[in-house]
Length: 564
Image (cartoon, rainbow, N blue to C red; front, side, top):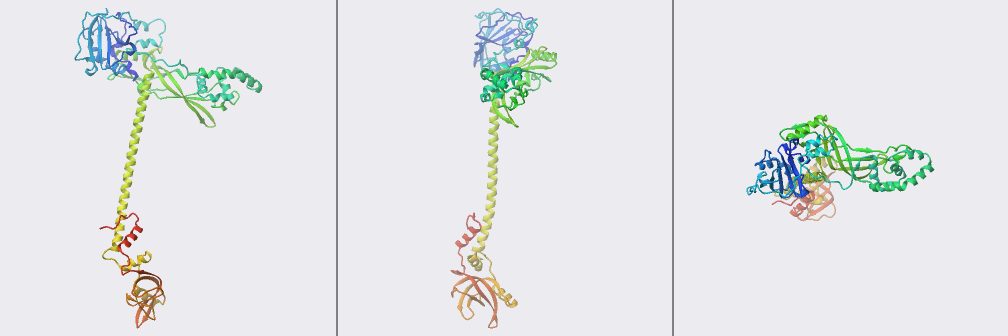
């Protein structure tokens, strides 16, 4: 988090009374923190490469510093400095020198002990001298009250933690219409094949020459041929790093428990760029990109501009400056504009650029030159990596949740299928038992075997109805054929039934269907069946258990089979 560079409560006190001959330090050291009130400066040995798992630090102090002979008490209070600037540091060797440059103490501190003295630490020889050159350091307060207006770097010098800024790969340019359109021409050179886009690039600085020729086709052609070589070469020098500033008025709130100054969150609004000559001839908007470029700014993490760590007097100083500035801040951005492509918009097209921040500084004060916080490219890269890690984590959690949902759905569907199958198995088993059980009705089996319809009729009831009404009725019956006489085949079972028709054989069982009539033979009422269709059965049962199972399975295809 960017605000960690503003740590160490007492380290930003005015240095008016400070007369230490503190070393500005050669290239082999780097200032980590300083405090006028405590009369100390802390350096990392190794310059920009001072940060190591086992670091070497030098603490220079004034003779009247309140930390004399108890310098080790400083380091637990500046733990956040170490966390922010060198998170990989686990131990450090500390050399303490007085204002004369004499080595007074030499001990080790450890992260595991809260940056207190490590158990194995020893105190060095106070008489041992350092070999470093000592030169006075300019007083911060004097710089702040100098006659010339202070540059933004003045406030930076007041910071307790000094970090070398990473310079961009290219020199930034202002976020202007001209620079934006030239970058588009570099990203999308095909647009330069459009004469209208050529005119638009040529008039980025002034419409005068175009105004003089646009109404005459020949003059316009001559002008176009004249400017084309220059226009074609202009995008080659376009850069993609832009610097710009915005002013904001903020609502501040200081949290004394956490030493956090809350100034609210803010991010630049997306911008739309159009050239000033777009509608001179009424047709600039019809060029390849519709005469419009849109820049979309990425969102800033809340931790980058919402709450700033400003402890103690540093927080008081920042609040005072905000008060004098009527709570106004200036945010200076450095952004890399990336190609986002050509997109359709209504009847035209427009070009999109995506702004990716690589450096942000927040200033306040009457002259807006007091640096509150600075976020460099390394912090943005880390923030994006963290964001992508969170995105991947969220996607993975969503994927697992979806898998769990699908698994639960499959389980539910499987349970429904199981319950349905159990229900169908029970119905199928019930049908099987009714056909193959001990109480089976032979006529029913014969009827099924005949045409799949288990229904059959009582031939006596049909005969009585037919006799009383003087008409025939459809009948289905199971009979055993007997001898043939003048009426027909007299059934052996049931009695008083005659069959008429072809293809019947004596002594066999048949299920027959046809028309039934009632006749008085020898003063007894007989059922006479005119057979339309007859199915011969091998015996009285007509269907065996395998036949019954096959029938049940035709009704319930997923039936698991006959029960025990």
